[in-house]
Image 1 (cartoon, rainbow, N blue to C red):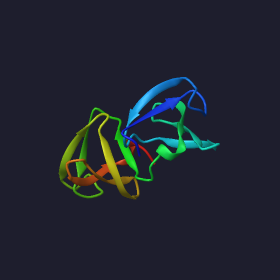
Image 2: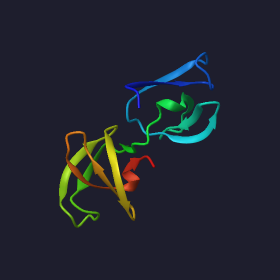
Image 3: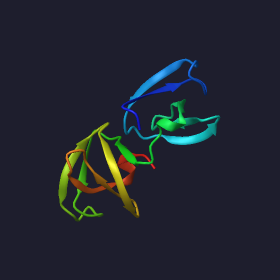
Image 4: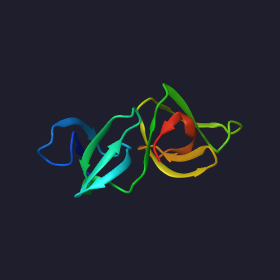
Length: 119
């Protein structure tokens, strides 16, 4: 929810800062303790963040070099746009193994789920 979020070694503002991530970076919450959340990212790195800084807005991260985002949930559908590795896409929904997404510029489409990370 904040523009930048510190990921820490433990649940507290005095714990060592391990990483800083930008708004929208997807994480999986593993545990909650005293207002803090232990999270994991797509590389398996785990750290603690202040729980109030987490957002309910879902995003996915492109994990392959270049992916086709299609006009529908099938390889039979045309390419709406392409997205490069580490691009964040807003999660809009899912149909089978296809994720409906929106790029920051407003383009929408469907990407094959194994090509992105995020719940």
